[in-house]
Length: 195
Image 1 (cartoon, rainbow, N blue to C red):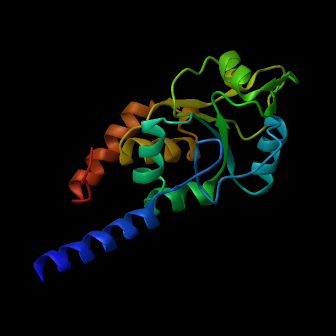
Image 2: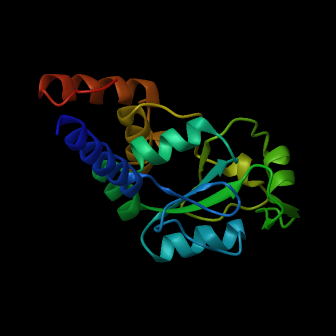
């Protein structure tokens, strides 16, 4: 009887875990149904995001990346994180070693993998936050208002999105000081459960 109950519990737990796990596409990358599918023309994506009242963020990932999996399973599955991102950002996923065509802000047509090399991205995930308006004569990497290489805990991750949304990069409060202030506010309110 106990063994039967344990097997039922294990089966339910496995099904629940599968339901919460993010889908993996044919390219081996984890997918979110709210990620934007575009022609990967960076200027066009910035303009479309602005028309939607959002900012563009590009996420570089790769097949088998355990940190990308963590980002999807622990961060992008958290409603507090995903709801904020969906409301304020247009997210376009890039494959670090992919062959899809990309048009840089300077007009150069590349593949995802040559764009990653050109922009100097070697870690996955890497998030590139773009400005509200298309800049003149710059590459996407030169135009980026912030870049986050790697996977972090919930508050660092979410606070970066908030800092960009609030245009913190235009002010005097560096992201690390902003993040420390928010962490102290969370701690004071009893909300700090991680990081």
